[in-house]
Structure formats: structure tokens, C-alpha cells
Amino acid sequence: MSVTDDLAGRFRTLWDEIAPIGRVAGSGGYLRYALGEHEVLLRAWFREQAARREMPVTEDGNGNLFAWWGEPDAGDAVLTGSHFDSVPHGGAYDGPLGIVSALLAVDELRAAGVAPVRPVAVAAFVEEEGARFGVPCLGSRLLTGVLDADRAAGLRDAAGVSFAEALGGRPTGARPELVGRFSAFVELHVEQGRALVELDAPVAVATAIWPHGRWRFDVTGEGNHAGTTRMADRRDPMLTYAFTVLAANKEARLRGAHATVGRVSVESNATNAIPSKVTGWLDARAAEPETLTGLVDAVQAKAVERARRDGTEVALTEESVTPLVAFDGGLGGRLAALLDAPVLSTGAGHDAGVLAGHLPTAMLFVRNPTGVSHSPAESATDADCAAGVTALARVLAELACH
Ligand code: GLV
Ligand code: MN
Ligand code: MN
Image (cartoon, rainbow, N blue to C red; front, side, top):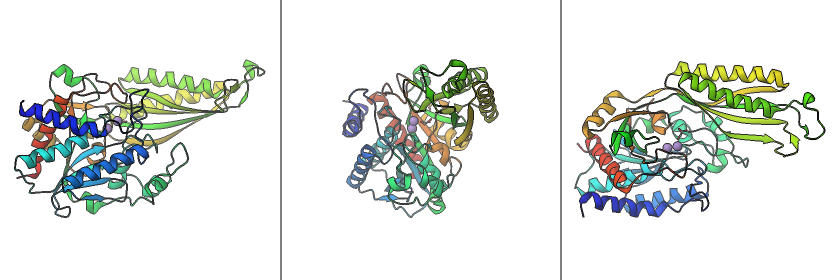
């Protein structure tokens, strides 16, 4: 058995410990909502793994956990890790791969007799997907002060539970002295496309994240009887909603951008009633900020015009926006050279995108044979995950161990 096979086996053993947590029997996907029952189990597992490795765990008061290899107060620490939460019925790898790989990378370095000169911190960030409280990268936005603690405290999930209630208290918010203790952040993540399949390489270094955001559009009309209301008399918000979805798709295609409406809520949600209100969430992304702004403006204009014709009203609310992230050229280039790895940009959001505004940040992507993500079909082979661990260990050795 080669050393790599052995590492792939160790990856599988650790991975199998968390694989059943939050897995849905029917879809095979995961329901790992931030601070929900399954994510809480994963956080407990993280603490136990850290304890086994004699890595003290600290919390930042915002729901983010850090397991330290080396002295937490020493400064110049190298941060790695990712998140445990998933989108509803998401894949196994988006998030947890970065945490499991980081723990194994520490094991690899220790086994090789390498010790950190600067501390290494493995993070488990809270609510990266925004699937429970609506704002993605909630933990890293709070930590860095990008999001106000009061606003975060009041965000509510579908059952009406606030983030503060789920957390057990108001979040602390910005922790500049903690952020100042980190000299770099490197997040390993499963690739969310097939570029590495096409490049025939197991690992890449990220160059940039497209600017992206979420906009809620509330369309209000008049709830009424499906059988007795004449077609000409209706003020049906579903029509405005449907038109807006099609307009978003068209406007995105025209610009080479991405627009998705993957979430909708309907009142009263009855088969035999014209809805009184339809709320949709637009996820929009583009390579350049102007393209993104132009896309959202065009969708809004079309929605308003359609609402006028439907006798409805539409209001667009920005829920979160992440600007263009160009990862620190020096660090990314250095890591690409170190690993002899290709470089990729991505349309997906990450905590690394938030941290990049505050410290040198880079990402490693691990090949995903299906290219599918945010779905149970997301995958990575154990051999490629082992290659990811090896790459991350080399990066940590480079940044923290001499
Ligand atoms: C997170 O995965 C996102 O890109 O929305
Ligand atoms: Mn994701
Ligand atoms: Mn992720």
C-alpha cells in the first residue's frame, strides 16, 4: 500500500464518522442547518477531534469555532478550515471537506515531525450557506464586522427562531483583535464545477470569486377564489413572480451572468385560491460588478413593469451582496507555484471571500467528478481528497512551519 493509499484510507475513516450526520434517507442529501440538531452534532464532533489532537478550541462569540495547533495568542497564525452547514438536501463535501482535510493535514505534519513556528487554527464557520437565517457567510461577516451584530441577532429562520436565540445570546460581532492574530487564511473546498476534470488535475488554487448577492422580491396582489374570480378581475402576484423569474433568466443569459430563483414562498399556498402574496429570492452573480448591477436593475425594471400590467405591487430588497473577490495575488501565486497546481475562478461564495477583505487569503479546490454541487450528486474520490490533504499540509508547512 502506498503512502497516498494510506492517507486515502485515513480520510475515509474520518469521513465515515460524519457521513451519516444529517443525511436524508430519501434524497441522500444533507440537512445540516446552522446551529440545528445535526450541525450541533458536527460541532461536538469537531471539539472531540480537536481534543484528541490536544488542540484547544476557542469560540469567537459569533458561533465560529477555532481549534488551535500552537499557542492561540501567539499571533501571525495561519487559519484554515471551512463550514459544516449545508444547503437543504445539499452534498456531503461542500464545507466539511475543508474541516476534515485541515484536521488530517495537521496529522500529516505532526507525523512528519513538523512543528508550527506560527500557530495553525482550524475554523468551523457558522451559517456559511445562509440556508437557515438567510445571510450567507454569517459567521465570517460577523467576525470581520462586515455585518452588524444587531442585524444578525434579529435574523429569523423559517420557524421564527432568531439567530441570537439559536446561538444562545446576542452575537459579539467584530473581533478585530482576533482577526489581527491571523496572517493568512487558506480554505480548502470541493470544486463546484468540472474544470479540474477537464484539466485532469486533482487540486487547483482559486484566483477570484464573482461578485454575487441575494435579492428578495415581494409581490403583493389580491387573494381570491380560483373558481369565481373572472380572469380580467384578478390581481395575481403569481403572474408577476413567474414573469420575473423568466426575465431574470433572460437578462442573465444576455450578459453571460448567472441568475437563479431557487426559493419561493406563496400565501396562502392553496390550490384553489389566487395567492395574495408571492415572495421569491433572486441569487445573481456575474464576473464584473457592473454586470451584476445591470442585471439586477434590469430584472427589477421588468418586474415593476409587469406588476403594473398585473395590478400587483413588487418590492425588491437586497439581503446580502459580496463584492468581487480577487484573492491575494501574492499568496495565490505562491501556492500555485508551490503545488504546481492550475488556477481557477469561481461563481460560488465562501467565507474565504469575506476574510479576503481583511487578510491574505487563498483557496484550494479539490476535483469533483460530477461537477455538481448544492445537490446530493456532489462528489470527490478518496484519492483526490487525500491529494487535497497533502496539498493543504504542504501549504501549512510553507506558511506556518518555517
Ligand atoms: C455558497 O455556496 C454560495 O455560493 O452561495
Ligand atoms: Mn455552498
Ligand atoms: Mn462551501
